[in-house]
Amino acid sequence: MSSPSKRRDADVLKLMMTDHKVSLAKEDSVADFFVLFEGPSSSPYEGGKWRVHVVLPIQYPFKSPSIGFCNRIYHPNIDEASGTVCLDVINQTWSPMYDLVNIFDIFLPQLLKYPNSADPLNSSAASLYSSDQESYLRKVREYVLTFASTDSDESDDWKSISSHPSSTDDSEDDHSSSDDAFSDFDDDGEVMEQMADSMEI
Image 1 (cartoon, rainbow, N blue to C red):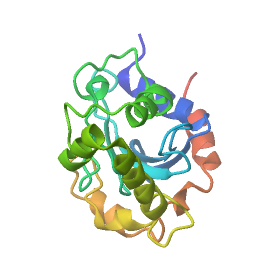
Image 2 (cartoon, rainbow, N blue to C red):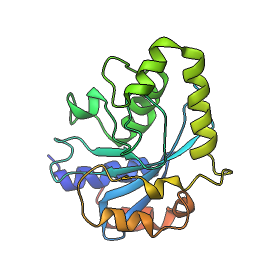
Image 3 (spheres, one colour):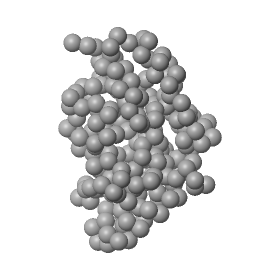
């Protein structure tokens, strides 16, 4: 049976080999990184791009990752101020059978498409979703265009948000030092090569 660290490295490398762009928060650690997550098609979030912070605990994959949206998103199950995500499969029913690709290919897209207003982190979004779908969709699109578009002047709004999903003291400094919310996703090929060289897979 492979060690948790080897499984962690393999899962991060597997995520990097998909269409998702990954940027390490610290050059010497694959347990703390950002993913450029694109809104799922056929949803009001389509066309949006979010910087998602992922922290893998030492016990991963036996303990779930911590994830948080860095730039603003309007959704009943995502806290607007902190970016914290309320998702049972991550917070309560996580299994080592799952991996990082599952989160970004299945779990998060499904959450955005099918909010659970009965278990909200954003109560105003949950209320609007339940009472006025048209106004809710309009609000979602407003946030996508304002905070999740690379063409928007507001696309770096993540800098003013408490965006780290775990209480690491130096994470916030790492965030605020970047000039653009999406600029460090340009090329992760070098990181992939370094990881592949150090792993036996």
